[in-house]
Image (cartoon, rainbow, N blue to C red; front, side, top):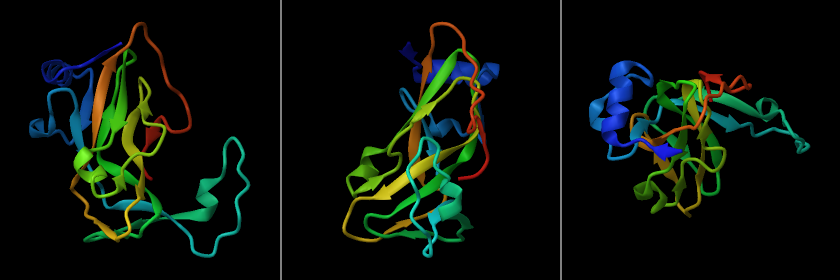
Length: 170
């Protein structure tokens, strides 16, 4: 596998093999594309019961989706699911990786804790597992550049048909 450069990313977008909506060419860096934070978050309910950890836990039973106008106040040690504003569609020979931004990590904001792989043929918004590791509240403002996507060409082709292959909510 090889990482796509800015030029290769732009060629794939122009050809339509990779789709990003909305697309802003200014968001394309030397080897990645910046994505922005939407105003939708999945937060933990306050009156929840313990959840047994199993292979596929029912996270929806202990969380709820909210929309914010100006910001979401992320408390120290709090975990939420955020979502990218941009939707992505990948071909069967390209996968992606969600990476955090070092400028945000320096203030204790982890924007994607685990499972950063975007499988080939995935489409939709990308859900982010966001956590505040600092000792101060952090205000998450919709529209900020929250993460970057690194694209990789694969050897061979594959199709992803999992539960999260076409995400539209956190």
